[in-house]
Image (cartoon, rainbow, N blue to C red; front, side, top):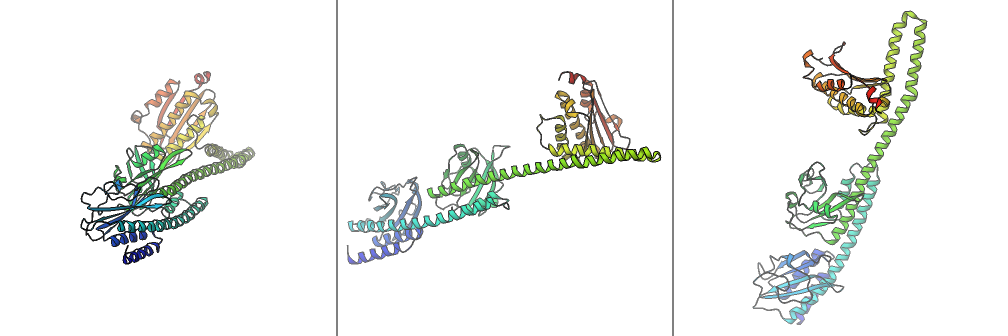
Amino acid sequence: MSENRLRRLLEAHRAVMESLDVDVVLRRTVDAAVSLLDALDGAIVLFDRRRGLADRVTHVAGSASRGPLADLDSSDLTPLTGVEREHRRAGISADDVPEFLAVPLRSHGEAYGALYLTGSSAAPFTPDDEEMIVALAGTAAVALENSRLYEELRRQLRWSTALTEVSSALLSEDVSDAVGVVLARVGTVVAAAVISVVVPDPDSDLLLIHTARGSGAERFEGRRYERRGSLVDRALRSGRVVLSPAGTASISVEAEMGPSMVLPVVVAGESICALALSRSRGTPSFTADDVDMAAEFATQVGLAIELIRARGDRHRVELAEERSRIARDLHDHVIQRLFGTGLSLQAIAARFPQAEGALIEQVDAIDGAIDEIRTAVFALTSRRRASTGSARHRILDVVSEMSDSLRVSPQLTFRGPVDLMLTGTVADDVIAVVRECLANVARHAGSDVTTVTVSVDQRSVEVVVTDDGVGVSPDAVRRSGTGNLTDRARRRGGDFTLGCAEEGGTRAIWRARLVEERSRV
């Protein structure tokens, strides 16, 4: 090796070793190799150490404006076992490669990259050329390992900082968008253009992009797309990470992006959604290190979802406890005071006969208020009962459900031992009657005040629904959809009437006997 070439090789060594940036080291290595051998062009490739696939390619043109390596297909490349002079054995599919030299990059005895050079037939590569490139590749391997360790240290620091920030945010009571917080921190560790959480749509065979962060995220957030054949579906079904190089996704939304990575998010042992990361077209695929770090954040997304659920459960418990407290106060204090006031007014009425009528009216008004408060107590203590619960609870649920169709929520009153007497099929009939009567009010009455009264004694049940709407004409009974109400009443030895209330509006009265039903209980 001549003194001039040795000096140039030493200068190349120094240039390569000066930087800790991987891209700079790769570029300087190829530049130096092409310059030392006066090659047509050169390329350096790094392989994913776990999968053995090329994930970073740097190409440099030399004496040729467009050399054989310009259109290098990295998918055909595999790590080399030694120096290679035959381009096809090295995975290069180009036809016209008169001179070729490939040298592996090794770290701790493992080949994780390769340096490729092409030359012309007029100036074939010599043994000295090969010796120089092997030496340069050794230096590059050391520089790249230093760069990798430095970058790994920085990423670990960013990763640790991001996880700490996520943990602090999730523990804070002020965070309303826990999932968004996690996604924002993922981007500080794993390079991605768009990061999103994708959930299956429970009402269709579609996927919903629930939350998205990154460049152009607004184009994706809220979009739905076909689940079948998607990367997300594969990840959810397998419970494993799914990697996709650019342009290989079959679903339109996923195909718009470059390299993608989808990780299942597991909550309580079930994959309920997916964390999807996508890069822009033309950028490198995700590496094994990217997968490891993203997997940790997928776990954080799962924790965020569990946290949201736990906070929701806690809020519901607190709300139930508050309702119970209000109900106790109403029952223990307000009702007793009203009851005492009523007794006092009755005593006064007995002493002052001239005011007895007015006082009795006030006592009746107090009794009505007590009934309304008792109804509110039951509503507060049992808001979301199953349909198989007591009759009182089921009626409350129906009234609450139908309230959305009315201008004002109905006033509901119970009289008598409702839960004791209304059981089985008669309870089902009463529920249906209340529902249909309120539906008729919503469709026809246009009322501002609606009342529902359910009265029960030992022998019968009566449901009275009144409103202050437009009233009902005599020939409108059948057209109001109330024929089945009459049928239900007659089957139980009762009757149904629909007419105008004395104070205006409509009054529906449904009655049925309970003797037969109670005898079967």
